[in-house]
Amino acid sequence: MKIAVIGAGYVGATTSVIFAKNGHKVTVIDKDQEKIKQFNQSILPFYEEGVEELLKEFILDAKISFTSNLEESIEPCDLIFITVGTPSLENGEADLTYVEEVAREIGRLINDYKVIVTKSTVPIGTGDKLKGIILNELSKRKLEISFDLVSNPEFLREGKALHDALYPERVVIGTDSEKAQKIMEELYKEVDSKIIFTTVKNAEMIKYASNAFLATKISFINELARLCDQIGVNVNQVAKGMGMDSRIGPHFLQAGIGYGGSCFPKDIKALLTLAAENQNPMHILQAVSYVNQTQAEWFMEKVSQVFGTLSGRHIAILGLTFKPQTDDIREASSLKIIEFLLKNQASITAYDPKGAEHVKKLFPNINYASTPLDALKGADALLIVTEWNEIINIDWQSAINLVSQPFVFDGRNTLDPFKMLKLGYRYFGVGNTNFE
Ligand code: UDX
Ligand code: UDX
Image (cartoon, rainbow, N blue to C red; front, side, top):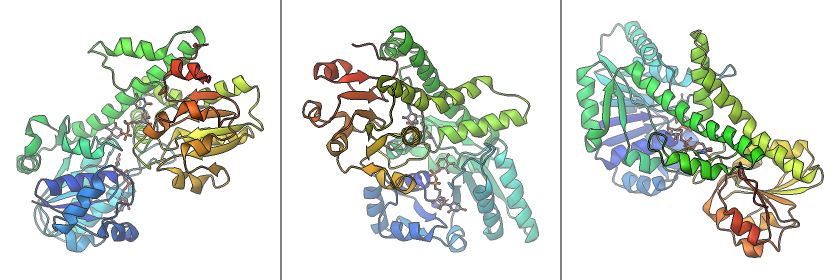
């Protein structure tokens, strides 16, 4: 099939690569010409493991191409995917400007039947809205062209997007059209046993509900960790014991300094706003959001308490991205931590293998190290903020000679506390402080 994918972010790019891999001819369209230029030189403008290699291969084989010209590219396509961003507005609602503009463009340009698929995360009811926008444009052109609007939300984790796109646990397809259903079935025939067909609105809700539930698990364990810290309980052991119950499951129970990224914070805000607009406030989700907003600060208060004051202390921050294997710093806890430290007059040296350049634009006046060991030199405390392998696997035995004081604050509960104590460090985790 011929497929147009509008929006070359990590979702659009990764999805396109998988469609090309499955034998389809894909055109990726992005209004950002600089980005398109990079793609055309086989350069991925962001870091997502494995995607660039496949991109090179498929560009050479002419299975995938990149352009900013929507007009020329969508006409020959059977399917048009919308994967532009849906960031948060000031009031928490999802900003649908880009998605709506793309729908208008589609309405202005199509001349025969198309399946139009939203993959961007959009509030419930957006599918109907986009259908209306396209119909309106077609009626301005006095054309009666049939099309179907399908919702096919993405569930790709950054850093593992390629894996998730290749081996999805489920493919949710919302449509009320048999014709569109058949085309989508054909598109996903490699994973047909994983497909759930439902209505457009149900599909839109499945996406929000899934992210909201995962965020709930994280905030639950983080809030519990605060209590564990106070009363001498190890939250890691608690999570392990809970997770062995298959009704609970072991995933997303890793206590830490909160969730970040381009999805959880914005999707939770959008669902809360939708609920409030419908006079149906979601109290659990409000608490999930509150716990997350305060989790990094709670952790930093712990650091402050140990030192009495942070003024004049030199702090090493290890990891800046919102999670490992990505260069994405959107809503990363590191940003809150840097702000907290600056407010408390501490000095900072930060290290991250992929995200430092992005953070530098926001905080040009802190120090950046080019290796984890460089970051530790002379530090009064080191904070583990992102659990990159090269940070976990630091030679801790040698590293103790570099620091000024051996305080380790493990914001991701990722190091072995007993090993660290044996090496002479003072170790503080999240909900597992009582080792001394
Ligand atoms: C995606 C989804 O779109 C979002 O809804 C979902 O929740 C997470 O994944 P992401 O891939 O992170 O977002 O998007 P982003 O990195 O913001 O990229 C979107 C691309 O769309 C950008 O390259 C931007 O230039 C492009 N774009 C945006 C257009 O081509 N046209 C527009 O009108 C707006
Ligand atoms: C998420 C969803 O997992 C994915 O399905 C969706 O489509 C996009 O949003 P992503 O944001 O890439 O993916 O990352 P994810 O692995 O879900 O982690 C999100 C945040 O939660 C990270 O900051 C991570 O550090 C944090 N997290 C995750 C925890 O603090 N504890 C956990 O147990 C799991």
